[in-house]
Image 1 (cartoon, rainbow, N blue to C red):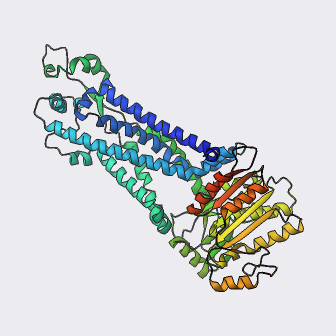
Image 2: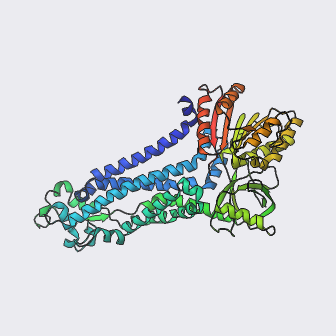
Image 3: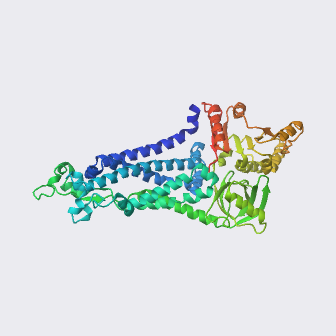
Length: 564
């Protein structure tokens, strides 16, 4: 537990502040509407559900203000650059942008449910009090619009006993926008489930853009002013503490109490979301501008296991290791943009990506390049954007773990190391790199075989053989491959990869790996970087906590996972 706190204290602090603000806003708004004199008469009709509806609305406004900010990729990249002198703990929070986006979305769903349920009770009570003929205060308040020429005095939005709740819902601004926003939210949340994102990305991509409908609806939701309170002038003339019990004498000219006057609350949601929406609009304009810059494809390589490598050039394109770009192919889809990690190094005169067939869009892109040699399909690129892998050279010791195509960010890092050593860069803080690549099939190792071979030779020529410790793990094999490997174990190079490092069969024993690294570097800060599945992430995260020392002067493991 102590190690977990050491590694995640700032994340816990951020979440605590966010949750604290949600609780504060809910309680503040609840007390305002449950105790405030201005809403005394409104509570006579609605009861405590008035306060529940308004408190959840406050929290909805707050979280709707936050929901777009984690999606401003250029803003996050800018903050990462300006935070280059901040501690790694501060910078790591930027890598949790998607997690925070999801948490805020869950909070919006929670308060939407509270808001809807509360208003269902509210409209039921509006309807019952409008039809009531018992002479109660609630019935008199509901009939005020019939006794006053000034339409601004009404309190109950159901103006006629024959008017149904459904009619009010679909004809009022608040009701109609509420229904539309709820439908948009349900579609966005359900289409964002992992199953749909992984298997039907296009459905997720298009449906998630209903956020525009949600934001527009939220901005105008409160214009109708259905929730009403007593006016200040009326409060001075007919305060509820003095006149509520004398409501039967309101029409008496000799009574000092008069009919209270009411006004709708002004729309407030737009004030919460205006700044984030403007910021996001600028973000999208910048993305569009950058995406329109010409991209020249200089080389196309088809690797085994249907992996396409694209090498490209673009005017003014500058990158750092481990960054990613968004790619669009207009001939396949005008609107779809997909993220890919850059596999080239900043020192190279081009930038490259490796694309594995993993869905309709990638299948179509690979086929387009297989069938058409010249001219190539037009490609648009937005980025690059920063990721956690940018910090790899900030650690004395780095553990790089890639699963399958998840090796791509580490290819960029290893290429950059190769260039740094070739040009005798002595400012490299990193003293040791442990690289683990886990693949299901032997063909995958061919993607970066040349790179690993070059690194082996370069380290040997420079007398830095111990700098890079890499291990390749094959998790899917048959008896023929295993038998062949056993028979040729004494060969100087591996029969599967041609490298001096032999391929391991099975999965890494992470406890053994972490234990040996902790023993070899008892006073170092070790950065653990993963691009792979959640199950592997959980295993590595547990090992980071287990093998980090509570003494900050001894070995510390910091877990970092690629998220985009």
